[in-house]
Length: 226
Image (cartoon, rainbow, N blue to C red; front, side, top):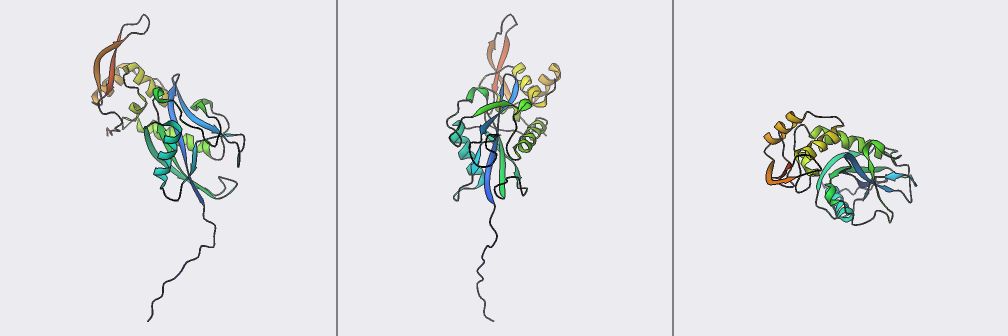
């Protein structure tokens, strides 16, 4: 019996593959994300998540890191979120998006570029404009993932500057959870994680007594607590 090598021809169009990013920060005690206005193509005139096509020589993770680096110039926390590929999510073609979310401290908000040659804007999570495609679904999914990870990881520390107070850290938790926390229980729990340490410095805000300043023991490292 003679074996032959079959040659396959793809008769159906292949879906386009891209990455979209939910870039979160905390501004004015509100969870905020970066959006770009659509200037061409589908959903023109609406706001959308920054993103772009995956190049032939890169995988989705590399594509997301490249886009994040091009837009923010910052080496920040980035995590793959979910793959969105429902037919019809983009009216122009069958498009599959590998979504990510990134966390940026407010001290690193200097943007390095523009997306699609247009300006960008920071919008509070609880006051978003109408978003293009299914990006509202992606944003909601990212916020839910972020809030859930507070319970079993140190992910909130990714928002913190080099030095911070425990009150500022509690504010980040409350902003993400959209609910107040008991001060005593919060501090007991956070200090038990052994992920932050005192700097032997204090900060005074107005007439209030000075607050101790803390820093991360292992900057940039996400730790799981359960």
